Amino acid sequence: MRRSLVGLAVLSLAGCASGGVFGGREPDVVVVGDDGRRYPDDRDYPNRGRGRDDGYDRGYRTIRVPRGHYPPRGACRLWFEGRPPGRQPRAMSCDRLYGRVPAGAFILYNGNAWDGDYDWYRYERRYRGRVPRLIVEIAASMRRRY
Image (cartoon, rainbow, N blue to C red; front, side, top):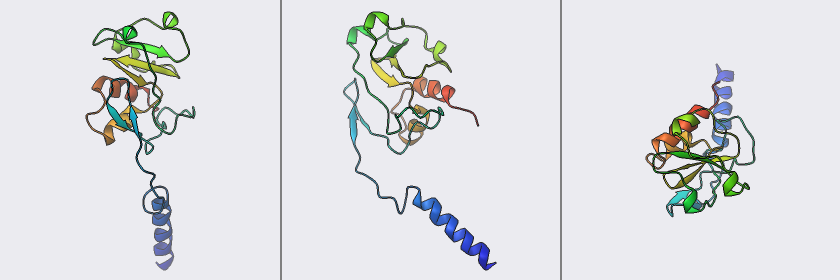
């Protein structure tokens, strides 16, 4: 009985040490997106859902896209950093992106560039109402099933 209580105590302390009680929290950082809105830097939710370790585990990436290259309202466009605008894929129906966003791509949707490598599903669970439902659904379709 005593061994199990000691084991439980050690296990609970190990769980707390992973972030909450013993791990100090850094001050919040704010990122300004293409739309001028402010988003918190989400260090608590790294990109674990996609099963990649791309080095983007400290929050989502941002990119500047010339306004004339965003797709029409309601459509989506993939955008790759480092490619000239003439070499980017054309605008398409957002339905075609479910489960098909390549690594390193951004999703251009309604005037914003959304990091395709970031797990927006987890972000939305913490910050309700800040991510369009379509982006959350695309992110959820890209999550690995364990």
